[in-house]
Image (cartoon, protein in one colour):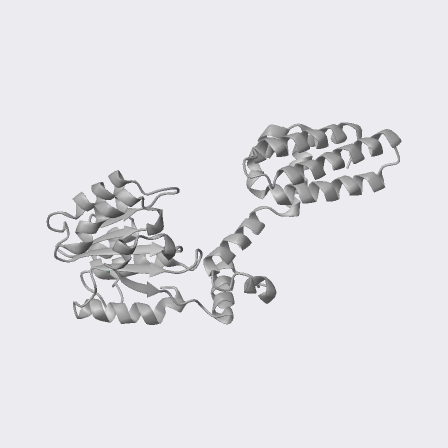
Length: 302
Ligand SMILES: [Zn+2]
């Protein structure tokens, strides 16, 4: 379990032991805190057939099925946009009848705030009339968007956030490297978001960027390929392109190529402005810029 959840996990685990866990629970906390990990851990504890002092044992058949993501009594609903009524109806159907593994049945609804009104209404009956050993675990980072009728039927918990030191220690452990505390402070309540940010940075370094430009020059990749590959790092690509173009301009003694470099650099500024446009095709914008750089490569060497 994530260390900042230890205490609440132990409390809830003790209630499972005493068979006093509420059948419907809503957990709130910011995105990147680890809510999914928390409810998955709780589900594993609920389904484990031989729990060891408040923890799932990790070795029984239930735990092994959970580890492989194939437990027949654990159901999950999640959607990038909206959780529709069909998804809710289908998952409720799965809760009917006895458990496959003679234990509990668990339904996790991730980002419960994305349920439509009809989805929420479809869920109400299950919340009001729980069947035996059935548990509904809901998570949200936007509790204000959840219908009051749903909220009032759930036991609500605000998940605890780690302090800065705990956050840094955990992320450094996962990341296997040191982290600047000032940078970590920006993410102190969201350690998983910080880790993701760092891993992204690791994935796209300046060396990777320079290699891409080299591939562009030798023709082993074209601008369209690179533009697609790099679109998630678009802001970095633009910034580094501008840096690289300026550097090339100071190195070049050929007036025609300096003019070209300035023209492309201007284009880079335009692309950078375009990127803040919500509907923009980021890959296409990058391709335009990279095509410009490919032209530079033809007249210049680097
Ligand atoms: Zn177990």
